[in-house]
Image (cartoon, rainbow, N blue to C red; front, side, top):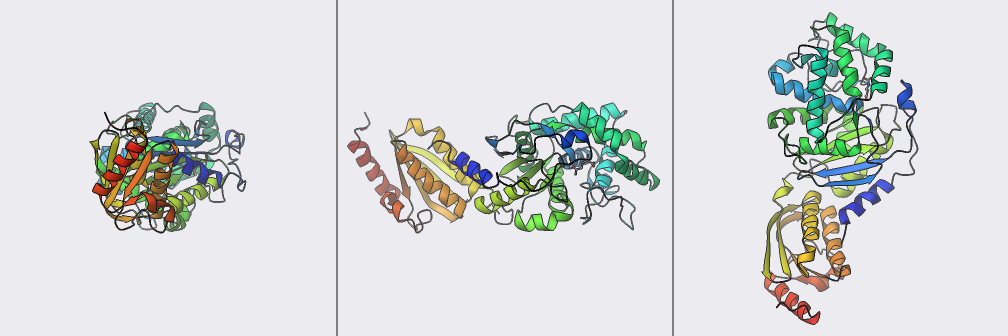
Length: 431
Ligand code: GLU
């Protein structure tokens, strides 16, 4: 049953391969030169298992996807009160590069628009711009679980053409928001935007946020849970700029996009998603990336208001009542992430047993994505020359699928009897 989840992701990605709407960012030549067809999807579980589909090794510049991470770094060093005094948390409903501050406080409305992001850079405590950038680079790299490098050419171009950002920087200085030289702060901002990532880096960075600040691939604690909670909150309300409302209702995951073509989306407690496709809509978001996130959310049930409980608790027990038979006992709410974890565990262990019994007696609720995945798992086991049985007294997984009735049992005892018979028939009698 190799790669069930992988097949789902490949299929959902393929749904949007033909989309060629949008345009490359062209405010600097380096972004206008990239391959418009580049298209990658990566998904990392909170335990660090990464699925990759398409151009997941293509590097691009992180651009505005950097903003939540620098904000998190400022929060980690200064605490929420000190950061709040300089940067608000209110959605602005404006474009990312609007030259604006809050009318009353004269501070940037939030850290996701350029004004707030530039202010966030200025808060990172360092003695020099070089040291400040090094702290940012180290911090992002810790989120990604690997060293992220600077794209020197993009950086040079950003710096040469950044009049709008300079206007924002000097405006912030005039309002007393920036204490440091605006050009020095901007230099670090251009460098942070020019760090190179892949969609897989973004997925892992997202999974680090999803896991409350611990990188799932290295196990390193990068930031406190309180910092992550605040960062994710601002991503929900402000991450997609003036499209934030649309995004929250259609996709329902804290997210951030960048004009390099990347999007990071986070399902707290469960997973991180990274997408790459450089053709952008009028608001500066990747067209295919937005559609892909929308489809992933719809088809896998990833909206954060649907997913209320931590699915890591899904798999309550795995035991071997007899040689060749393994029982997987699930409970609670079974949603995509929980089903993914279950399928992955069963897949990893499939060489050790001939019959897998999935006991869903304790499952309270299941969504369509999890139901489909678990039904496919039972079929895939058969295709592998193994057998899958379901203990499903209430028809939670089986639902209306008549083809699964033959492998459905009301309790573990009767499933075990069937398992022994199957082993005997297939001459795999233990001993
Ligand atoms: N470097 C770009 C800027 O600051 C990033 C914009 C974006 O990704 O939204 O203008």
